[in-house]
Image (tube, rainbow, N blue to C red; front, side, top):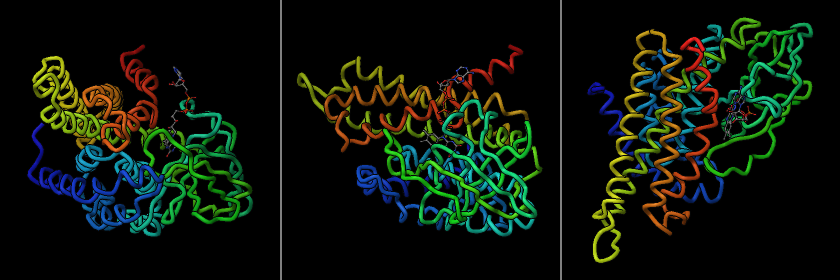
Length: 375
Ligand SMILES: Cc1cc2nc3c(=O)[nH]c(=O)nc-3n(C[C@H](O)[C@H](O)[C@H](O)COP(=O)(O)OP(=O)(O)OC[C@H]3O[C@@H](n4cnc5c(N)ncnc54)[C@H](O)[C@@H]3O)c2cc1C
């Protein structure tokens, strides 16, 4: 798909930013498990957090194609930064934009859209992930306040110094799931210590505990009892963003491996001269290209207001699986150096696996696609 001049300009500016600003410092954050506040601040200034939001909230007036282009270019260099943006926009701010009242939008969106604040989306619980309808967290109305009790697991962007809120899903009645905004710092809202993760080590992920957390009744997001439908739509859109991110990682593996294959010598020649290596690279590039076509197609359908759910699932399934394959091959091409953390491909390898898990596992994507065929 041919991107517009505007999107190509966005791609070029994010690519420069990723190479010049992210690449030199991200390995240090990754190693130390520190959150890259300075990078996030600069991404905010570039307008990346506002890409798919209208100008009235300070956004750039773009859409999911624009967000995907930015995510792809960031993930080509680093996935921790990319997932921070993806979760902040698709999971944090988008539900407020889609389902919030005028007052909620005015209160929360400007800071989220500018990147000055981050929001999380608390759906997964310690006992339930894929089976998200099994939510155990409960919210009970007491006068004009919700009283919330429960736990959430693996919540991205929930514990940074600039996190302003987490939207949590909770049972508000038998078989009735609703979404409620919980501002950071609300008494009883405890953010547990950050997880020690295999990958995405410079991103922010915490368990959350809600112990008699009281928020105003007006913090209900969208209609009471519509929380399940809302988060399914949120995840459908988010899968396009994850597919773009996975494509970026797969392309980053190509970039690093082609450069390495031209430099590294064995048996008197560059290893790229061996057909065993050049064919791997040809396959890696082909995989990244087809993943890009798949997410572009899903995003174009979403933007055009067409049915996109199954195309988003196919794009996410394909892109995440080829990202894992490309990361494995990139490590192989780098030989022993590919196993050293100082090489970007080691980070790619560690970061790729979770793409087959987060925002719906590969098994869940296959279920969505199979259901669409009447199975
Ligand atoms: C780093 C990270 C960040 C995350 N960020 C967030 C976040 O911001 N917000 C949030 O809400 N969640 C977040 N998650 C949670 C993530 O979405 C879940 O981990 C994911 O949906 C899978 O749920 P689970 O871990 O409970 O696995 P389970 O649902 O327990 O699945 C275990 C295995 O069983 C398989 N399985 C389950 N049901 C079926 C079935 N019906 N048929 C076939 N196979 C099945 C799964 O595919 C998987 O292979 C994050 C996770 C990670 C690792």
